[in-house]
Image (cartoon, rainbow, N blue to C red):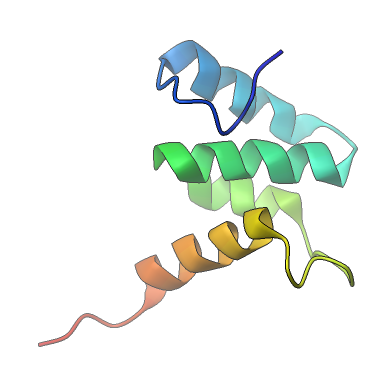
Amino acid sequence: MIRPSSSSRSATVADTLADLLDEEDQLIRLEAAYGLVLRDDPRTAEAIDRVGELGPGFEHDHRAGALWTWRWQRNRPTAR
């Protein structure tokens, strides 16, 4: 079993997480994307897109918050 929040930074773990983005279950896709966020994997933006719209009940979910924060940090204008 792969734990997305594990400290392993191996390419095998990241590849397995990326493979889980094809799952039908949105919670599995969310967990996989969260694991890629934690690793700052180059596939993270695509992973977040593949999670899809999260409905009610995710307002306080740490995984959803991490995805939002990751995207916000990359899309905000840089200070000059």
